[in-house]
Image (cartoon, rainbow, N blue to C red; front, side):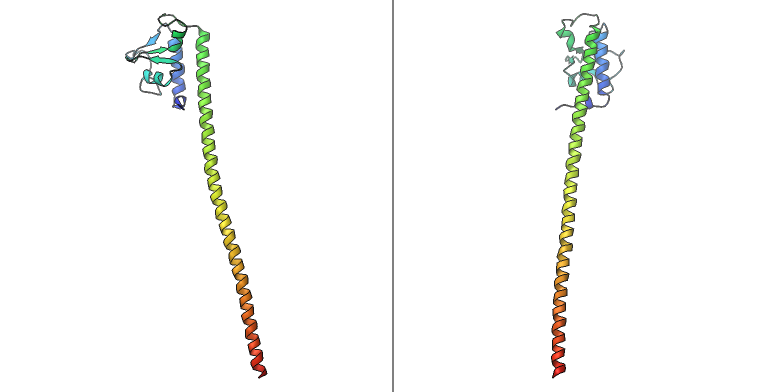
Length: 165
């Protein structure tokens, strides 16, 4: 899934272009137009448009258009489109950005949880390994104590028998 709205400064550029192409008499922005600032999120406005076909169209000569003008039948009119339509487009851009941001945050959270779970499993495994080793050595010590007691008892019996002879 494309995350084009998460490119730094992209939302700002999309909103600027919606306003510029929707509220001005210019129905397109040509590549040679030097009166407009450069985009902050891409090398050119046509690159921004290529990433956002939901709002814009770019021609081969790098001129950009607001797609809604074609759908409203205002493609070549040199007058602004309805302010309510522009506001709705901006609202849609904000909603798309919010969804992509939320999806990205959710994926990062799931990834973090997965990594944390793996580390915790490793930690639990290490703890269990340690506990098993402690228990094993406890058992070995008990056996060694028992064997030592049996040897000491046997040595005591042997001394007792020698002393009686």
